[in-house]
Length: 379
Image (cartoon, helix red, strand yellow):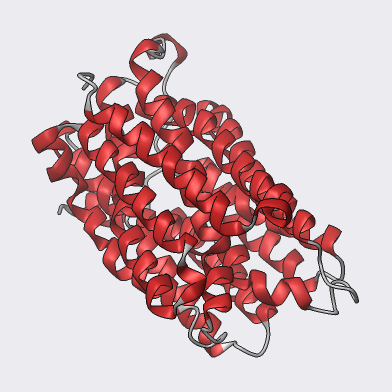
């Protein structure tokens, strides 16, 4: 890759890796310890509260998505990526200092917003810095940075197995470092003049938006409860992070998203991702019966998670090439609604129905929409 493209790729992968792989999903990884920590509540944090906080982190994600294009329109697309790093660092620091579920929620939501701030702007940065035929490759590389973040947070969780607060402290430090690297290596692309902006093709975005809703709902549930299922299966706190290592390593398949979408089209790749995520959720529903099943669920989930994220960026960019960042933001805003609602629904119903039943329900949802996309003729 050329020098500018290489720097954008590395810095972008670092920012996305920390925001998505660490800040956004550290809550799910540390959830078993949060639930029973007397430093937060002497009686334990209720399931409904944990579900609300998990949903709140995705509400923060939605807020970042909504605000990112507004800031980018005034200061250029690099500005929101910097804000995302600050939100990740400050939010994680608040979590470290939390002495109650309320303060924990504030920090977790702020940290969760980091991912919303940073993802879509890189579509505009890619449009300004590389040729059209190289953009899918660059976006795939940046999106797959999440793999590195997942592996890193897993390693940190093992090293800091005595306290969940140490894991969040690492998120704060890494967020700050990624933001600084981003400022140094990513060029300050000017905002797109208002006169040059074209209307968002709403009709063409219907299928990407539908996919985003179901994809975000399925992945939110998987990440929020995978560590919990692994705990019930008998995996110790020192072994549970292996789930994230598996997802991070096997998720490197996301690097090939550009080639896959070029060969069969984004809708078909998206369909395959949803169908496979559905299989992973089915395995997770029975994961508490065996550590092997819990680990297998993570292995099946890895590739469609990373390929699925990159596919959304490539898909929206192909249907709105003149303004890919805004198109991706629109799809992400709609998709974030699924990510917000899914953990809240599970938290509210898990006592009455049980986690396995709810995981099966989301598996059916993913499979059904995936099957519908297979039959779609939209490109």
